[in-house]
Length: 258
Length: 382
Image 1: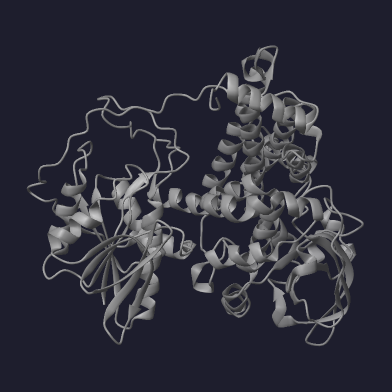
Image 2 (image 1 turned 180 degrees about the vertical axis):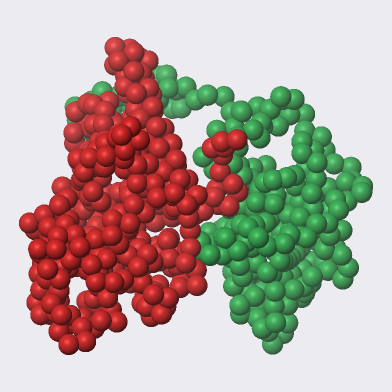
């Protein structure tokens, strides 16, 4: 089975972002980019499927500028992906989800691979649109927000669950298909030191970005959340006193009770 | 041109160590410190991801890293826990004599099976009657047919209670002083080897430390490292290699202390403003930051010198001595910044002071480092 995993570089979770010069995005200077969390789970799932299904291979692919995109592809190779393809885009170009999906579809070619895995959304813009757009462009079934992905070899189908309000929907799909995976239902492995060193020297294929990125949106403004106002500490001697003072404040100042 | 930036390869190794340190080590650091627990499951994971036998060539199953890359990793690990780091890197110290003095056949025989699985080794030099005066060691190696018989006791040996392999320095004749010292590889299961209990220590409590006693232990000649009488030279050349990572370990502790102090100073309010806005604390933080950076740069300079083929005796002594003194000072100032809270075990800074203290003592006490620095220095003036 040909398994493709589409990955995206996102700023490390603890990064303190600053507004960039144009005011339409964050300033990438000094920002450390890592494999997006949901994508890490997708890579893990791809590797588990490859090891369970004889004759499979995992191909990592990413769209974006140097050097962050190359770095997450190397991280994917270090985790165990068999090969990697980089669709390089000029630095500073806004990456509209549809444009990314078009570039991915172009690079993956025709016929599409048996399975394309993505994180359900990236940890930076949280748009979650690429899996759906890619499925449409490739003309194959696509599912977002999937968990419990399983391969039924006898029927050559995947089954998966989608959490809904108060329950789970169960779906099954033939291949080829595109699946956006939820995080936190597998435990992504840590790359081993020798594999990291090997991945540094591994070749990475290049593919051109889509000539026509499509009618994408243009970011208008990027701003940081307003700073939080200070917390108020309540002085108290007994829990009863603390509760009384809290209720008084909630009623009279915050006005959450009549 | 001199360049202090890291290559992408170096950054990815540092990232791995950082991830391991913060994800696997840090959550258990306080608990292992409190209970003096040896977290073997963490050391097993360190071996699994390749963070253990850093200096052993890849052909023998190690990570095959240069000293500079080792230092990047060690600093990150020590940021999370100095004690765990000591136990993780103790194999580098114990195996270095084999890398420096053993034949290719011996290296294959000992290193490949050792590195393939999780195993610990201990470097057995120090004795109850002397550490710094290594030439005066008393453990005897008597010739006996086609081999030797070892008798004596080693102390303060890192990982000794948990190790399966010992590199042991013993003398053929104490009268010969340094010229009688010879190095051996002794498996834990050899008859007559007894590892003592784990000692109660002030710091590095996640690491184990103990005595190793040798009573009539037979060692075949094939398990001697190098020639008879070459042991002292092998021990000193080993320490020339492994001293620099101690500078990195101390730097990691110092960086952790600075980060905790600065973070606390921004939050703690006195006289109506965060203490970070009081000049007394600003001066403290500025001095701490200088010490941390100088420690790191001296460590990098030493690692670079040795990786470039230099012996680095002067550079590594300066790095180890300066960084360990800096770590103690920065940890002390971090406690002072925290005030009374810093003295409480509930907060993480007092552990850093206790952990920093050992870096001034082990792998050559700082008094010896200063002796070496002065000797190397004056050679240039004579």
